[in-house]
Length: 385
Image (cartoon, rainbow, N blue to C red; front, side):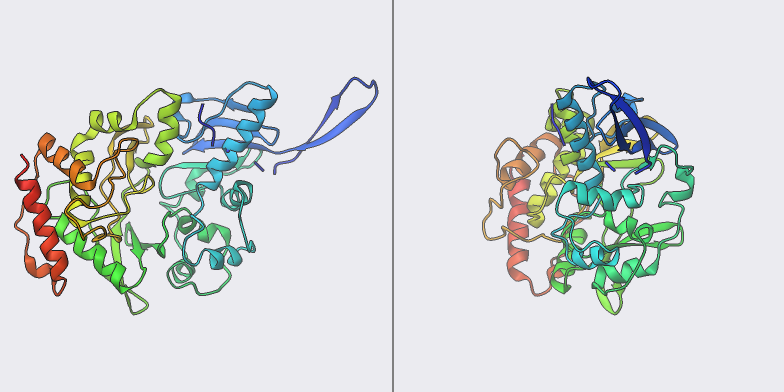
C-alpha cells in the first residue's frame, strides 16, 4: 500500500498494564476529517483511525482501521503528510516571509507543516475537505473560503514578500496554492482570481503561451494580463467551487496504486481529449513544467468521483527545450519515456490537432526564434496524421 501521513482536543485516559494498580495518563487529540458538512473519518494522535465513508475519503489519504503497531504509525504518517500537502511548497518564493508572519520561522517536517495547516482547519481552494477537533463546534459554512472574504494583506505578502503580521485564517487560501512563483488569490465580485508574478519575462511567457493555446479547441485555463502594485501579473479564474474539486495527478497516484489502477489508462478512459490536448499544447509552446501537481482530475463533490481531467493550466515556464524539434521529455506519460514530440504526434494521431484559429505570427513580437520553432513544431504535427 502507498503511505503518505496529528495534532489538540485533549482527553485524559487511563490504561492498566501488567502492573496491577499502576495507571498511566495519556493526552490524546481527536480529529474529524470533513468533506463539506459530512464527517468521513476520525483519527487521534495515537494513530487510531476509523473510516466512516470510504467513498468520500480524500484521494491522497490512506487510513486503516486496524490497531496493530505498524498500522497506527502508518496512519499518523499518512495524516501528517496529507495535512502538510495542504500547505504551500517550501521552495516557493517568500515562503519564509509567510511562515514568519504566523510565527513559524521554519517548517521542515510533515509534522511542522501539518501544524500550520491544522491551525486554519486545513481548508483549501482546491477542494472542500477540512479538519476539526472532535469536540469543536464549527461548520464548513462558517470557514469555507468560497464564502468568506480574503484579506488584502495576504495578497501583499504573497506577491511582494512584504513583512507584516496576518492571521493563520487570513493566510489559508494562499498557503494552499502550489508552485514556485509568487501567487495570490483575490476576490473580484463573485469570482476568485489567481494573480501570478515571477518577473516580467515569466509573465510574458504565460500570456503568449495562453494566446497561442487558445487557437486550439482544448479545455484550458485562460491567462490575461493584469497589474498589481504597478507591476504586470497574469490573471486567471478559479476552476474549483463548492460543486467541483480538483485532485492532482500526484495525489491521484496514491488512490490509483491502492485501487490497482493505471493513471494514464484512467485519463484516456474518462477524458482522452484533454489528456492528449495537454501533450499537444505543451509540445507546441515548449512547456517544460508539466509536473504531476499542475494537472489532474476534476471531482464532482456530490459523489466524490472523478469525472474528467481539469482544464489545462500553468504555462509560465513555456518556450523551454525550444532549441530542438523533439523538445523536452514528456512528463505526463510516466512511467513511459517519450519526448514531447513523440507524445504530441501520438496525440494528434488519436484525436486530431483541434486547431480552430490561424496563428498570428505578430503575437511573438521580437521573439523570432520562438516564432520559427513554434511554426516548425506546428507543421510537424500537421504532417504526422
